[in-house]
Length: 516
Image (cartoon, rainbow, N blue to C red; front, side):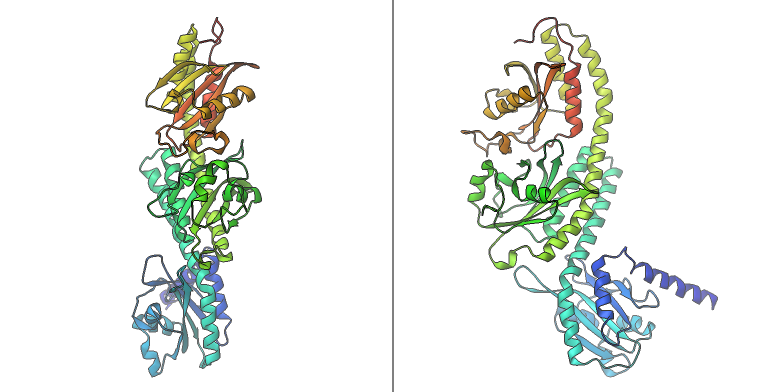
């Protein structure tokens, strides 16, 4: 007897745990809505997982035990299974003939709770194409002898339709949150480098945001706090299947306030552009030509915030072929939930990448600084400096220019933009760094509106168009410029900038002026 009591208490504890705030709020809201219907004493919510035909009972309220929780409702099996395929609400009494429609599993958990009557309600949603889809099943039962009217059954049906989307979104976000944590654990267990982990995390967030928000494309941006510029870390999907639009690929640069993402960051809340090219947002000139060629594109962007600090943004977009593809208030609510789940993960990945780079860079910088101190000539200092920055920042090529922007020394591991000193975009970077004596970087020379130059093809293909340039200075005197290139789309971190600048500051002033 004592053992049975303990088991019942344990089951009750499990049931309470599964209905506490660890469950998505939408699940708790749904069961409470049905618990308020006349005569209802206990409610179970079965939710359909993405790409699954079966539904699983995930939440309950009013139950005295864990009966039913975790039960799979298979299509065409029992009343719930029939509703998963098609059909409207169902009601019946367990002790009468209509109760025979229930499967043995359904009858078991309903009977264990002492219920006598039950309503089974489908959560019927609508796809973007207007097709009906059952997102879940609700079992609303009474322990009393009660006969629900047609009016009550119809009200329950409407409630199911009203709640379907929020339950669907909550389930999808629960799935992606679990997937992100699993991905992080697997990457760490496999010994993946911090940069690799950041890249994989950003890609997964982009893919899952696109899927949850039923969009054609998803982009994750990182915010460079110093400049206010957004740099795309990852992209998933395409605006037009089979055609990649250069303006929205990885490496896209958005100056402060530009684009839908820039607007969301400025407002610090989700922002919808019903027509990206309508003038409702600032489209950088470098993107205008590509955007003008697109069919009407609607976008939704939302900031990623940790505490009150914005660390990035996510943009999703759909081709607007009918009113059904407008982003709704439900989409915005789902986006805000995604942001709360994604921001801490992305911040963790960024911190890990920064920490790893600092640890690696500190020892490397100490070693390289010593070798720089032993160089006595301008040529030797230049040669050692470019070789050192290639190691320190893991670049493809490096160059040094004097204070007038004239080349002094170049070394390339792979062909890159630094071997073309006359490129007008590179000249703009050199001029800006020389003028401000502050480092500047871009993930893609050809896709950065701040560097737009006439006569330059923005669709050019190159493996190394990411560029970081730091000033070589002694006190207030500019001696030269140190530049390093990386793979196109690479987002240099704050640590990369700090290490490159620290290396440049270690350059010992030679006994003769820095001239080529």
